[in-house]
Structure formats: C-alpha cells, structure tokens
Image (cartoon, chains in turn blue, cyan, red):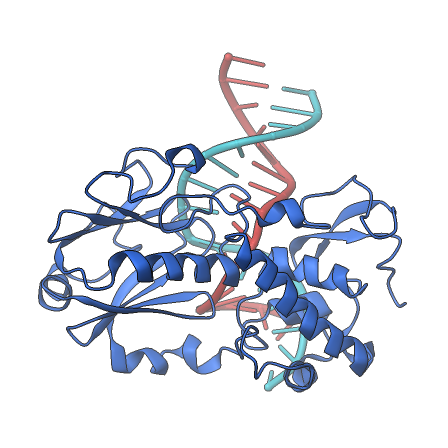
Length: 291
DNA sequence: CACTTGACCTGTCCGC
DNA sequence: TGCGGACAGGTCAAGT
C-alpha cells in the first residue's frame, strides 16, 4: 500500500505540520515491535528534541531531530502517521478521513508535542516500525546501503534502469522492479500500472526485453508515480496522508483492482494472476507474453 | 551470488 | 450465523 507516492505524500504533509515542533513525550502502546526503543533512549534523544527536517529515501521516512537522532519510519503495509493539531483535526477534512478519534485500537505509538498536538503511529498489521537512530548512522543501515536509485530524480534514466537490471536477467520483470535494490519505491500498484503502460507482460523474463522497452519502462514508472503524487497517492484500504485523508490515484488506474473490466486501451479483458508471489493485474490482450 | 518461497500480523471477504 | 481458508502486499531470512 504505501509505495513511493504515498510515502512522499506523507513526507510533504509532515514537513508542513511538524517541523519546528518540540517533543514533550512519546510512548509505545503495547507494541514493542512497532517502536522498540527503550524508555531511556526516548527520554534522552526524543523528549525535548525539535523536529528539524522530514526526509524520505525509498519507502522510508526520516524525521530528523535536533538531538542528532532521527526517527526512522517504515509504514510497510498498513502503517499510518497521522498528525492531530490542537483543534483535534489537524486541518484535515473529517469527511475524507478513514479514521476518527485518536488514539484508536490500531495506534501503536504516540508522540506528543509541547503545544499539545500529537503524531499517531497506527498500524493494523504491525509490520511497520519506527525507531530512533543516530542521524549519522542512518546511511549505514543495510537497507540504505543496498537500496537502488530514486525513480523521480532527474538522474534516473532508461540507461540507469537498464544497467540496474543487468544482474536480474533471469527473473520476471515484475519481480525485478519490485526489488528495492534495483530501484527504490515501486510496489505492487505502480509495478502493474507501469508494465501496462508499456504493454509488457509482468511475467516477461528480464533478459528477453529489448533495450528500447526498458527505456520506455523507466519513463512510465516516472509518469505513473508523478501522476499518483499529484492526486495524493492511492488509497486501496488503509492508506491515509499525514492529516488522515485518502489519496485518489486509483480513479486513474488502468489495471490495478480492475479485474473483469475492459482494458482502457484495447478493450481486452483485465485478468488477475499471480506473478512474483503477488496479485498481478494484466490485460490479456495487449500485454501478451513474449510479444 | 541469483532466485524463490515462507514468515511476519491482523483484518476482510467468500464459500459452505 | 459461524467457521475455515484465501488473500492483502513490503521486506527479510532461509531455502534451493
């Protein structure tokens, strides 16, 4: 669910809402795995610290603090970071919100600021996590060292994707672009949408794809993600932004969650398969295998 | 090393 | 209605 456009949407919201605020208290709510830092660490490096910046790398959020530590957050599948101002709605629109009063039964941690506003970390399935790390150590964690290029940066080109795919020639293109060490930020929704955009069947073996198609795929990934970003990301079931609002990109999706419907391009039937262990949506007419 | 599969959780939906 | 099972999908560990 939260893929790059969703995490970036949360980042932008948090940057607007929490930079400059000072942490008054923080607690994990019966969820040591969601927020594993000790009470002593929280006291020393979080309480009293001011939020200086909110960054993102791949699907990971980095909330930089004046203490020299950062809150590193991965929302995984059902994580939400929702800010509530002192008016209790954080400036968002209750009618668009998936969530009501906070904390709720999925709230795993709460960070309260000195002005009594608060940031809630909700996560139904508890796959997500949030932890304090020295800011200087963040680039040293395994994930950061291995993760691939950011697809929305100008430096991400067809040639870059072509090079990154060289060591994944013997797998399907879907598995390859979901691999965060190939490129950062693609998840199930944008994998299906960008493969549809270039008429590539998700099961196509990477090694058989012409270079020109890889180049098109790189631009398709960019445009699909930019489009999603401009609509606040995709809300399938859980995802909300930093104010609790849903994203509306799925209105524009061509194949994702559209099984049984006609392909917007050729009228063929959209079917759902399993590729790389994931539910995969494909037009059986214009995304034929082995073109 | 490249590649695949299962585990991690907890909810919803579907068939009987 | 209740109940079991499949499914959801990001990452990592363990397997081939």
